[in-house]
Image: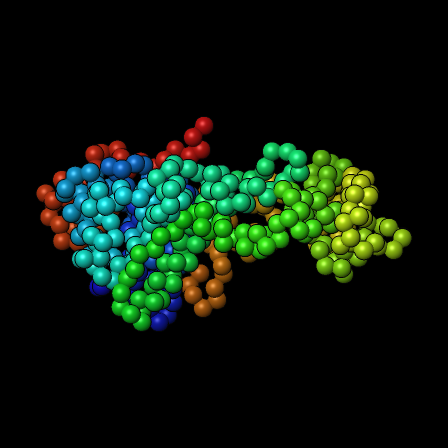
Amino acid sequence: MNRPSASAGGSVGLQGVRVLDLSRLAPGPYCTMLLADMGAEVIVVGGGVGSLPIPVFLRGKKLISLDLKCDEGRRAFRRLAEDSDVVVEGYRPGVAARLGIDYDTLKAINPRLIYCSLTGYGQTGPLSQEAGHDINYAALSGALGAFGPVDNVPAFPLNLLADFAGGSLFATNGILCALYERERTGMGQYIDAAMVDGCLSLMAMHFADWGKPVLAARGDGLVAGTAPYYRCYLCADGKFVATGALERRFFENLWAGLGYDDPPPPHLDRSTWAAMTMRFKETFGLRTRDDWVAHFAGKDACVAPVLDPDEALAHSQNRGRHPAFGKDDAVKAPIMRATSGHTPDWDMTDRTEEMLSAAGLCLEEIEKAKAPAGNISGLAWPPL
């Protein structure tokens, strides 16, 4: 590779690493945004096979337009892959091979290439060709079947669990591991990242607990919403507080903070939960959310306000750590002291000619490889 490495004056962890991003919608683009935040050069290949990903995930990326349904577009992509480090794609199994841009094809021209296929069900198994979204993958993993409320329709946390936690973060972790291993072996590898697999891994603690008192049934357990000190309560103003006083000393602080004079009961004894819950509901209903939060400040009782997204954007804790945090720009995390904290810029310019010219293609080849005009427009999100 002839790309620059990090300078001595400002270390950027993945500077010099080039990523070709063929993914769409959320899981793949979020993964590659994280890589861009770490300093990688991420080239989003749009056009010809669908629109670009959700705009908020385009931070720090370069956009090009290739028609991968034509020979010229595929040849241009392979030329880029010769001098790239990572490819991320989210096609159904078999599609990349039919296009001639699969791992085996690209490995032949670049043995150091790390190729990550990020899908819902993975490359193998009876469901590998089935369509799905976050809710389906969370359902298959057992996670959705454990979420409350009790005796009602399962609840789910937006599309955070499978798309982002089980998908994006596990794929990013695999890519970083493969980059590190390549430093020792000199060889790339193939990564089969499935969102169901990530959810199964995330459920490890709860599989072992299922059916036991700590997680007796869906929505019924110590951290599932039925323990009176680990749940949310409605306050006088119609807003909510979240309590998480699992440890005994935190529970005792909560009990005292609620103004009770009688000794706190054995809080892990499930026989105390029903009466305690009713008592807590009545007490929390006497004051507003923010009054309770101010009252419990500094008391180590694990009480926090349940914020809506607008409130979270403005909260002093979040704003203090991330002053530039906003609706249209994701937080850069984690904060790393020795690695540059610079947040990549946004650039929606079509860089097709620039990138392909640098890869050695002539103008005529570039024109034939480009997708038809208009295909580089971003996905309209939200769709309503």
